[in-house]
Image (cartoon, rainbow, N blue to C red; front, side):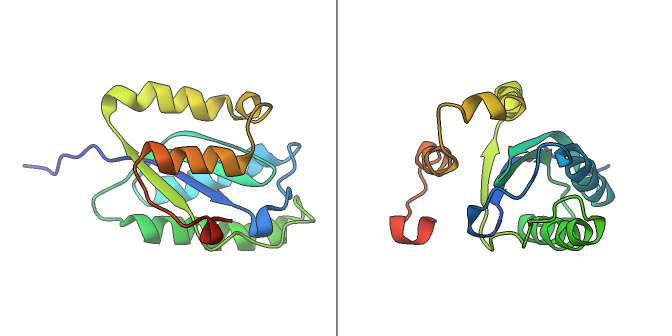
Length: 148
């Protein structure tokens, strides 16, 4: 009998110092590259999107992979690729920290739509406010001085 699982993660991470260095013109190339990394780790990507200073990934986590390794692998590989590609000339790196939030199958479509509509959400809300809201919604205690 196989291993059965359903582990949905909404992963959010920002560029170093939250500088807007992911240009809209080439962001889809970055998202395709991240999708390839996720696929190679036997995980399923459901949605990816972001803004010039952060990325949202909604994916299933394969039982053989742990979350921190997946995020580390995505950041390390994209850091190298971004710098070699020349598509994001102002990019200097990713912030060390990240947020990861779990969701149930009933919430899957809601999260996919939320990530799909990132550009729209951020007309009304900053990344800092969005991240603070995600932490609060998930009951995660945090100290403001370490947040940003």
